[in-house]
Amino acid sequence: MKNIFKIICILALMAACKNTPAAEEAKPKNEVLVLGAIHSGHLIDSITYNTAYLTKLIKEINPDIILTEIPPDRFEEAVSGFKRDDSISEPRVMRFPEYTDVVFPLSKEMDFEIIPTAGWTLPMARARQQKLREISQDTSRTEDWNVYREANRLSDSLYRATGKVNDPYFIHTDTYDSIQDVALQVYNRLFNVELGLGGWENINIAHYWNIEKALEKHRYEGKRVLITYGAGHKGWFLRELRKRDDITLLEMKPFLDAIQ
Image (tube, rainbow, N blue to C red):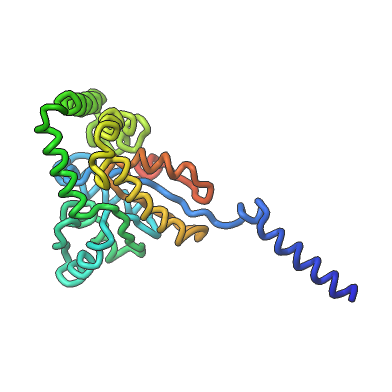
């Protein structure tokens, strides 16, 4: 009887140890990076942050998983089209050269999983466009619209004044995020509620909900996860990711340095 009691105590102690902070720390955290894309800018910018540069950067990062700004309901068509034609023909995904010219082609030579995480939907986008048009034409909202446009002009001028437009080093800094926020926070304050699912805060919540689902699914797998979204979203995501204690957030600079 005493031996049975001892065994029970040992098993209970072992179970308790599994839940200690030390045991949690022993689990391999995923490494996470957020890559700020400039969409069509990757095609226009032939000097610095072009698709060739982006290809080298992703090769250097060598991710196990890439979380993308692709809506889940558009992903299957994009994949099947790429397998069939060796190119992307899905209309939404075609807007992103970081996927059509970089990520999908790299998937043929690198071993990573592509996960669609965008909260975007076509009805949401159309409703947002229509609502913004209505606001811009509403004489009772002239002041709001002018404040919004002025915030955009200020943000753009601050960005140009840095002399680092489309510089991948600068894009991956907190300063860049702060400059983007000059316009985006005004946009959010004035219109987020009216724009519904298409509002700035609301769409980021939708994007991040899918990102979190993916992070939870692969929690403590010791993998490297690359999040690729338009650079304007980067600051919002980083603020949320920094709240997590189950991942290691990596800076982009060492990878940029490595491909110079």
